[in-house]
Amino acid sequence: MKTKIIETILPTTLGILTVLGLLVVFNIIVHNGDAFNSPDNVFFKLFVPTATIIALTIQFTLTIPFWKKFKTQKKVLGLTLFQFTALLCIISGLTFGLVFWETSFGISELILVSLTGIIAFTVYWTVNLLTLRQLDKRIN
Image (cartoon, rainbow, N blue to C red):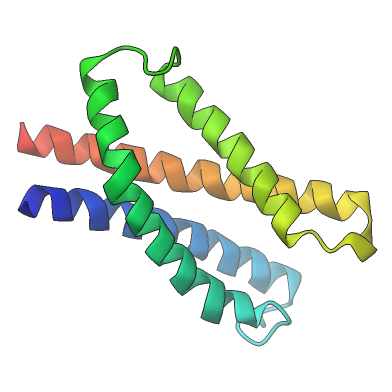
């Protein structure tokens, strides 16, 4: 049980902190060093805790079982781990773009927000899966 708790909390936390760190740096650059007082401040206060709870739930219920399947099988649902993760990042990033797109800013805003989402999910899942791999090496 201790291993399952560590596999749930550590990769999720490291992934979220990495993405959050990149977003803070981006926000500091774009808003001239005013990352936590910018118009996106609500993102840091509301969305991040909510996303963390959702990420922990997904990690426990979906990611760990899929991770174990990928360890024993070369392909799951006909996809390798890399293909599955890439598809997941693209779909998640595009969904992120649609959810947070402010239509008044036009299609270029949709593209920018979707690209940001794809990059954020790619960073998150890369850190998450690399952490799971390291944990597996230490356990075995």
